[in-house]
Image (tube, rainbow, N blue to C red; front, top):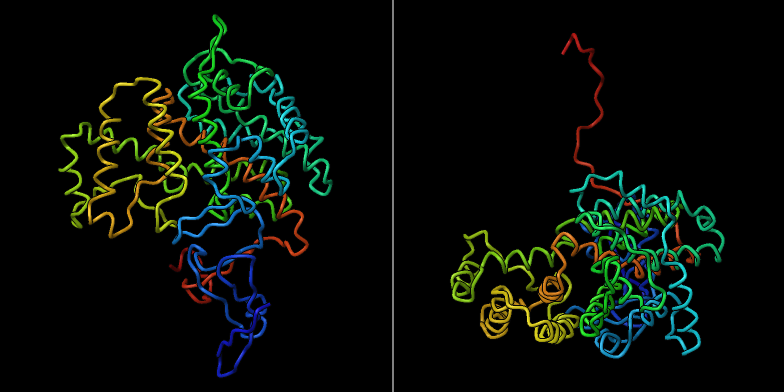
Length: 427
């Protein structure tokens, strides 16, 4: 505690403790506010409310800082790999070589899905959106893995965590395969987490699939950059669902459903669709002018961020990765020329600089995923795959918190006051 904050309500003074974290803004502890004043706070979107205490991820949007357990995201993306970052988020520290090998081995041995789930997939329409399939399949996991749904047992919680992280690439790849009418591929234990996912997605039984190391490295970076992002909408959904005591598979399915919303997980798809709408670099000035026109509904997607008021630290890594992938694959598509030209203009144009509308991680990730060969319907699926480790770590942290209680936001009621029922014939 660093002091007290004074609130005057109903003509009376009330003191509330001010709490300090290890870094970031202090918070006013208002847990006793309603009991003392009979009032609630009003904070739509909870943008000024700390809903929990967490030691996982820290964001400073003004400075463009993103830390996982204290480690800067750019260092993790450039020097680490997704398995290391997953271990870090789950356990609090980077693993030793032996710990990393054991963790990777454990995850690899959990990548297969129960064989009956293949039949479950075939119950979906062929044109079902991959996110609809992923949401349904993850929710159904609790019907197949009863031995890891007791949230009071730390060992079962960890087994469920490992299963979710391990099986998500298989679930995602099978959703893609089902949508294009190709046979499912079983995991290959010789490959890395990311390499295995690429093979299950793009490989076919008729021939060997060779993982491109540049593409593998790019996908691994995308997974790292999307692994966790503090108390965003989907993470808060996972925590809220978990606060009721729901099993971990149901909680992650709830997070996937929230992520599916276009305002959350669909941003990279929206950015790529915008690039396709522009179509050619020659048309960029026209769309720049439209973006500056307040009366025009057009908006540049993939620029700016709700949290970051500086250059998104993830975007710097993605920018470099995008160039590496496009150069390696030699993809020729006007939208990639549009992306590169638009990026340069936005970084120099006074309008965008003054409003801090920098290219964000969604701008670059959509370009990379398209170049690799993913359809836009898979973009949010990949986001969910990567974010699963963050959701799982946040869920574990919440379950272990002795101050955790079921989520119950309050409201400012503006409906009718009490009135008497009138029989239908008298209305």
